[in-house]
Amino acid sequence: MSKGKIFSGIRPTASSLHLGNYFGAVANWVKLQDDYEAIYCLVDYHAIIEDYDKDALSDRVLNMAADLLACGIDPQQSILMFQSAVPEHTELAWIFNAITSYGDLQRMTQFKDKSENKEFVSAGLFNYPILMAADILLYHTTVVPVGDDQDQHVELTRGLARRFNSRYGDYFAEPETIHTEAPRIMSLADPTSKMSKSLGEKHFISLFESEDSIHSKIRSAVTDTGLQTDEMSPGVKSLFTLLKLSAPESVYAGFETDYQEGTLKYVALKDAVYEHLVSLIQPIRQRREGMSMEEVRRVLDDGSERARAQAQVTIKTVKQKIGLP
Ligand code: AMP
Ligand code: TRP
Image 1 (cartoon, rainbow, N blue to C red):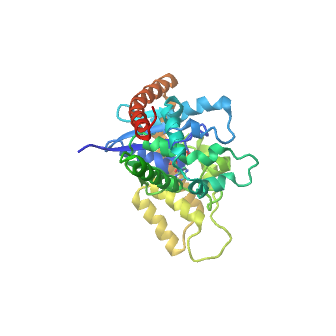
Image 2: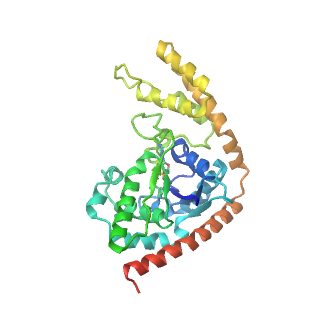
Image 3: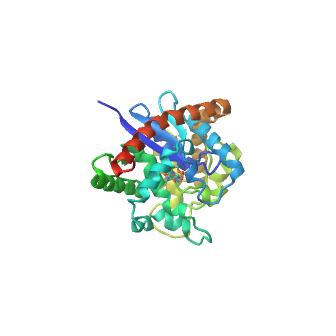
C-alpha cells in the first residue's frame, strides 16, 4: 500500500520555535515521518504579508529550519524546503484565485482577527489561505498536521479541491487535518489567548530561550483570573496541559489528586512544569547547538529541489486541465 502524503508549513516570523508550534504541530511532524511521505515547508511568502524585518527574514528561514532538524525532522526521510524556492506554489495560488470566492475568504476568522484595528491590511493577508491551499494541493497531500487555528484554512482547501475537480475533472484529493493531543497551547501570561509570537515576548516560550527566562515565565503564569467558579481556571488548566505533555503519568496524577483534594500549591505545580519541560526539550536544545548552518542550507536547497520536481508535474497537468496553451 502506498504511504499517505503529508504537507505542513510554518511561518518564519520569529527566530525560533515556541512550545505552541512544538506541541501543536511539530511533535506530530516528527512522529508521522515513518508512516507518511512528508514535506515540511518554511512558508516565507506567508511571512511577508504583514510587517516584517527584511534584514532578518533570510536568517529566520535558516534558523527555523535548524530548529526543525533539531526537533527530529529527518532530511533523509522527509523533505524540508522553503516556499519561495519553488515558484509553482505562487503559480498555483494564482490559478486558485480564480476559483476562490471572495465571500469564503471574508469568513476566515484568522483574517478577521489579524485585520482588526490595522491601518494597512494587505491583499496578501486576505489571500493568505489561497496560497496555503496551493501549498497543500500542489503535492497531492492527504494529511495536514497543524494546530487547530488552521482548521478553517484546511476546510477551505478541501472546498477548493472539490471545486477544481467539479470544474475541470477529478484531480485533487481532499486533505484531512490531523491534530496532536494539544492542538491549542495557551499563553501563560494570558491563558485566554493562544500562545503566539505576535502577542509579544511574555506570551510565548521558545524552545531555545534561557532556562532562567523559561523559569520566570512559568513562575509568573497567571493562575487566577479573578472569577470564582468551580471549574479549573484556564491558567491552571494550561499548566496541567504542559505537565501532561512533559511529565510521567504518575507525576501528573499526583498533582491532579492534590487539585481534587484542594491541597495543590501553584508554586509546586509551576516548578514541576518547568523541570519536566526543560528535561523534555534538553536533547533538542543540545542538537540545535551543534548544528552547522551550511549544512542546514544544503538540506533546504536539496529539499526544495526535490519538492520542485514534484510541483512541476502538478502545474503542468493543472495548466492543461484549465485550458492554458
Ligand atoms: P505559525 O507559527 O503560526 O506559522 O504556526 C505553525 C504551526 O504551529 C501551525 O500548525 C499552527 O497551527 C501551530 N501553532 C501555532 N501556535 C500554536 C499554539 N499556540 N497551539 C498549538 N499549535 C500552534
Ligand atoms: N497558515 C499556517 C500558519 O499560519 C502556515 C502554513 C502555510 C501551512 N501553508 C501551509 C500549514 C500548508 C499547513 C499546510 O501556521
